[in-house]
Length: 72
Image 1 (cartoon, helix red, strand yellow):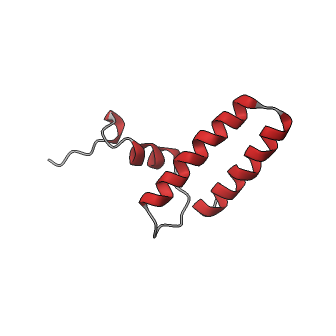
Image 2: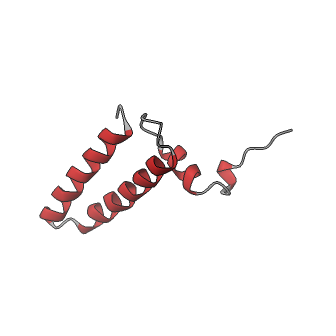
């Protein structure tokens, strides 16, 4: 994806399609991803690039072991 807005729009479209097809597991996955992307976007209003899954995860879980940054 080029931008977070395009990624959100694609997820919304795919979510609607999954709901219409009755694909509950895919719909649940897309709902969670959409929620995380929207939260990330709220935390970074001036940023338009599509974040990686790791960037989103660390934004939502800054204390996770894989997200900690140590200054030596």
